[in-house]
Length: 119
Image (tube, rainbow, N blue to C red):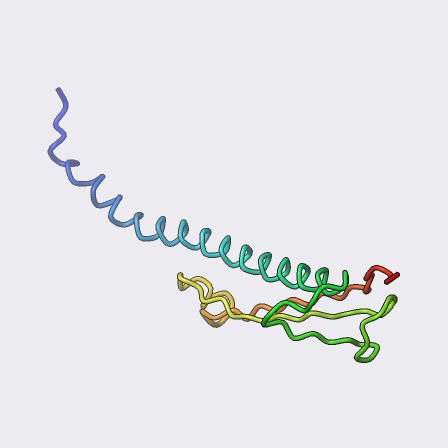
C-alpha cells in the first residue's frame, strides 16, 4: 500500500486557494445576469407606458411623458417615454470593468398614438 501521509492536506490547500476565485466568478455571472434583467425590465416598462398612452388610456401614475409634436394627444402624433434608474452591483468585478459599482440604466421608447376614433 502506498504511503499517502505526505499528500494528506494537499487537496484541502488547493481547494482553499481556488474557492474564492470560483465564488467570485459565479457571483459575477449572477451579477451580470441581474444587470441585464434590470435593463430588460426598464425597457419593458417604458414600452408598456408608451403603449398605454398611445391607445388613448390615461398616463400611468409616476410617468412623465414628452410629446415631441406638441402637447396634443391625437392620431398620428407620437409619444416618448423615458425612464432612468441605477443598478448597484454586488460584486467588485463591475467596479474593475466599469469603474463603479453603480451602473446607470436608461431606456427611451417612442410610439405613434393610435387611439380609437370617437364616434
